[in-house]
Length: 228
Image (cartoon, rainbow, N blue to C red; front, side, top):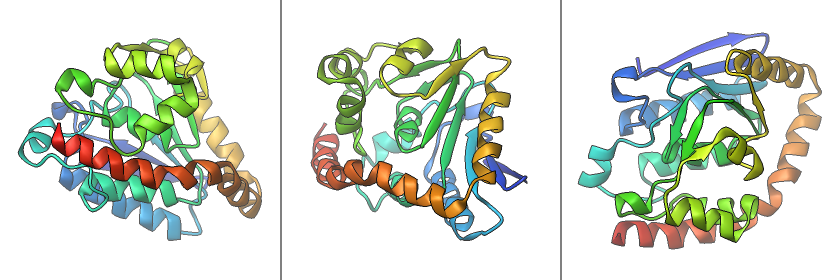
């Protein structure tokens, strides 16, 4: 199974388990992940979802599939997964304990809280691969980090350290590598004990402005990505 899940104290922890593929997300895994999130959204026993796996967080999308069928369409497996993330009313969290590349980094922008280990590394290597940003990343990076920093990391495809990720608004906090998972789960458990109505309503308000613009951006990105 490409995904492992554990439910404890109303916190659902999901782990991508494709170490032989550096935890890349192929179409099959994305479809399974989308269904898992939809089920979690409907399950009253789940109040918080945490993405966390030791080692490599995610090396991005499956490059072979992207070359054979390049798509940033909302109706692609990756597009449906991002839409599911975007429409989740329950808090989404991520714990990054290693490399997080491309589509893996894109996912972080759709999480509500993200914590990273001090030695974790991030990358938005679209132009280095001859591609362009997709799924709202061109808007989200500029909104969080400003035009010049976003341009530096996307146009030059430069690696991003944990501290830079914090400064760019990509993550919520940075902890020592051996503490980041415990710190993330402690915050997840705190969220799970709060009023679910208040948490969901607050999340909706926080996401309102972002969601207003992102659909138009995604459509333009899809055209540019497929052309590239």
